[in-house]
Every structure is written in structure tokens, then in C-alpha cells.
Length: 437
Image (cartoon, rainbow, N blue to C red; front, side, top):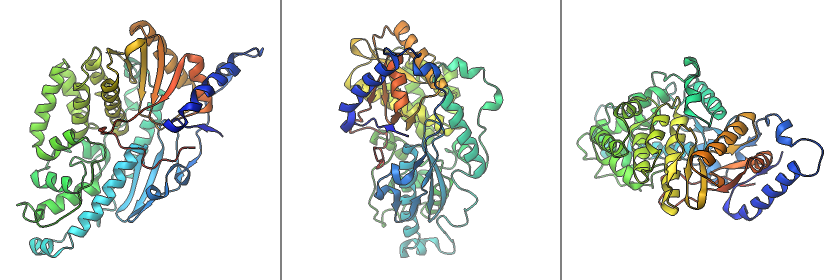
């Protein structure tokens, strides 16, 4: 199987490939275009060794398992660590989980210092121990999340098409230490001490990682007065997945104050109150995810942006919620370079109109292969972008990679695939040492 990598250093090769493959599919042969005959591509077979550079593949406290599933639009990684096993659906989540493991290691070291032991007294704090059954993605939640990824991979089109699905299609937030349960109650009990220690180790205080959440809570309980934090020096890493602005809010302000800031931001976007309430109630949108989305969309505020909040509020898994957040951040960065004038409404993929009649489908995806569902979604999006946005050029702006067959399919549908150029100030994680083949 061959794969086409969308990267800046190989972009000079990509356009000719599109043209050549399109010519093959629509040339002088008597057979119909291949896209009309071919079925779905089978899921590709990747390994972590192929996808990741050595420093990312293995660290002092973890190793990424070599088997990587890619049944939908995201690579599904499994991380074995000193603190248990973690699932990471998508390379951006992989970057977050790796930093969280480093944070756990840092907190473990703090718990062994003399100043901490003196403050703890009779309290016993064992970072990551005794929590084997409370992982960030327990078996049940991981199964549900994986199913959500597959369903999500079937629909990049209209929101209204998703609305008619059966109620059983939505992933249900589980209780205990699961992703959904943690996200649903992520603001509960997050006090100033917890936010302070989350900042010291550079992680999200409203993390869905139950082991990390418990570790921060244990350390903060001993250090409620903040005396230890001032005596322990830790190198504060750059946060993964948050800009400094968002980090300043979620670390420095009370959660209720952050919620009010987000409410004002949505009102400025003219998002109806009931839609804002739906977003805030969605158990998969942590306070940090909400803040990231509102901050990103607030810098654009063009026609259709408020409608995208309505679409995002229907997320039925954490991976979906993160997709909507990262799409909004891509829009923010694209708008900063080339101001957009409107966004396609009623679309789960964020399609924005830029200057010169160009419309871009902004897709924070790891992998796109040729399937009937993706073909249908791109066909409909293209037609709607031309009709509703007046687009004369269609671009798929992608953070990940595409298969050769998908390149051909895109060309036949009038789409050009271009790599997403990340701005230096982006809140989205870098490719975490992803190899490009």
C-alpha cells in the first residue's frame, strides 16, 4: 500500500500527483472513472515505529505500543507507562498524553521530597498507584470512544443528517474514572491549589486523564496553603493544546469566572442562549475545550460561525469535541493569514470562504482514505460551497495525510489537497515527531 504525505517539504510533488492521477481516472480509457467503481479502501496498517520518531516512540516513563489502528480518520495509539496504560485517539491527543505522563513523573518526584513529606504528615500520597482500575480510557470507555470515532468517520457532512440517527448511536458518558464521567464533572473540586500545580507541570487542570487528575488533587490537598509550591522548583513546560491566553484563563481564574467569560464570548458571536447552554452541558466539552473554542471563534466572528457552535454542541465523544475545537483553531489561524468572509452552515466539517473565491475545508485529521462516505461528503460540501459561498476554488486544508486513491478522488471532485501551515502561536500540538513517508 502506498501513502501520500501532506507535508510542506513534499508539497512540490503533491499537485503534479493530483493532476496525473486525475488524468488517469478521466483520460481516454473506455472504462468509467475508478472512483465510480472502487469500494472503500481497507483500513491501513501502520506501526508506531513507522509513524513516530524515536524520541516520541519511547520516553523515560513510557513506550508507545507498536500496533496502531487507523479504522477512521485518526490513528489510535496505546501508551504503556509507569502509571498505567493510556489510549490516545489521534496524534494531537498522543502529544497531550505524553506530556501528562511527564507531569505524573514530576508530581511523583515532588511527593518524595522532604518538604512535601513533612507537610503530608501521616497522609500517604502514591502518584499513579492504586488507580489501576481508574485509567483515563477504561476498557468500556475506550470501546465506546473507538466506536464514536468510526461513526464520526462516516459523516463529515450536514449536521441535520446526524440528527436523524438513532439515539443509540451517541456514546454515553460513563461514570467513575472514565473520559466522559471526568469531563462531565471536570469543574467540580478544581480549586486554586489544583490549578496552581497543573500550571507547574504544564497540563490542563480539567484533564480527562483520571490518573493525572487524582495526582493533582492529592498533591494539592497536602499543599492547600500553597507553601510547598513556592519551595519546589520545576521546569514549567510549554502547554500542549493550549495557547498562553487560554492557559492563563484556566490556570488563573475560578471555573465559574471562566464560564462567565465564555458566556460573554458566545453572546458576542450572537450564539443563542439555548445553544450556549447545550455546549456548556455537553459532557464531552471540558471547560478548557469550551474556552479554546470560544477564544478561537471570537477572533473570526463572520457569518456562519455562531451556527458552528450549534453543530459542535452535539459532539457525542471526546474525540468529536476535540475535532470541533481544533477545527475552530485552524479557522482562527487561517483567518489571521487570509481573512475569511463566511463559513458554511449546517456542516460538521468547517468550510470557510477565503479571498479570491477560494473555499477551504479545514480538517484536523490524521488520515483520510477513499471511502464512499467521504466521497459523498466531499461531493456535497463542494456543491454547497460553490452555491452557498460562491466558491470558485476548493481546497482541503489538512493537518494529516491522505492515501493515493483519495488524492485521485479529491481531484475528480474538484478539490485540491493542501497542507495546513501551523502558526507559531497555535494552540494545536505539533506533529509530535510524526514520520512522513
